[in-house]
Image (cartoon, rainbow, N blue to C red; front, side):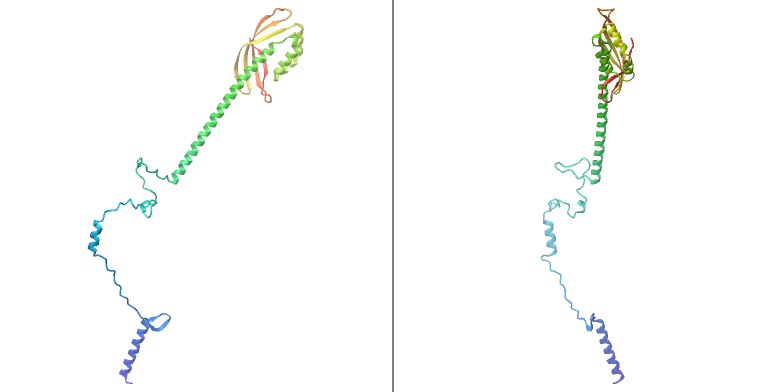
Amino acid sequence: MTGAKKEVAMRARRDHTLKVIKGAKAGAPGRASQRRIVPRQLPRPTEPIEDLLRRLDQEPVEDPTEFEDPVGGDDPASADGPLEKPSGERSEGEPARAVPAGRRRMSIVVLVVLLAATLTAAGVTGRRWYVDRATEQARQAAVAAAKQASVNFVSVSAASVDRDIQRITTGATGDFRDEFTRGQSQVRAAVVENKVDSRGSVLRAGLVSGDRRRAVVLVAVDATVKNVKAPEGRPSHYRIQLDLVRDNESGLWLVSRLQFVG
């Protein structure tokens, strides 16, 4: 084979090899790929563009609220809830807009604080009323006890001396009880010996000072005293100051000190 022919044959093989390499598929070496060219045609309009635009312009305009999504839909303006109207403006029949969660929690906290403050104030007021009422009742009871103790002290009779002395002792406490107990034998002897018959009554009584535990009361007493020197009796007037304490167990007011002041 001549040199020219060899060169032509080699060029033909080279060209064939390049075509094989360029058209080879993966997994199938040596085979040229076959490409199919499919022509694509655009769809033909059913009517001319000019007629379509003219028809759209002539159609009535749709009401945008007719197809409004009640739950917000994809409208970005409704993603965060209904649009707020200016302050103080709300259409008649329109439901109130939803309060944000943070503002609602703050309202609840404020309500709880106000409720707690109200209950605290009511508790303080109620306790103060209870203390004032209890103190007033205690003072009234102290005055009543002082009046009765004064009558018991000046109402003594030889016919009932033991019972009278016991009544005075029962209503006494502290130093006054101790002093009267030590001298009750002399008191009894004097009442019996002089045939004393004394009956007293309270004219007036007033609270000098007092709380729920202690009190000082001034009592004015009139008495008619009979004895061997005055068998017909003679009037006597006494002003007695009594210090009283309230017994923890019985709750009774007892005389801790008794003295004549006029």
